[in-house]
Length: 138
Image (cartoon, rainbow, N blue to C red; front, top):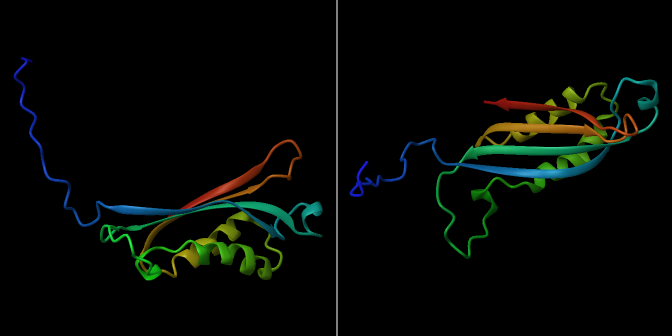
């Protein structure tokens, strides 16, 4: 290669699905009745919930005064569902089932194209955490 190399600049991709937004909720603690071990059947336990939601990014957010939440994927309803609604479901034996409930809630927003849910039981083994992760697309 010589010192006179030419670099060709191209326009950004215009593919319809190229731009994405990921909205996340990290380390949300919920008291859930979950598990199959005898010690997990009698009382709720702390479950750490992480959720990542992916959607198409239809426009650029350049208006510094924009406040309309209907133009974004709002993470507050996801937080409220995990903290307020999941505990009302009662005892659920498997973390996988809990994850599917969260995925289903997130997919109620038709813009959401993918959901990742990670659930962790921090106190299940005393010195170690255990958990699962589920990833779903439409």
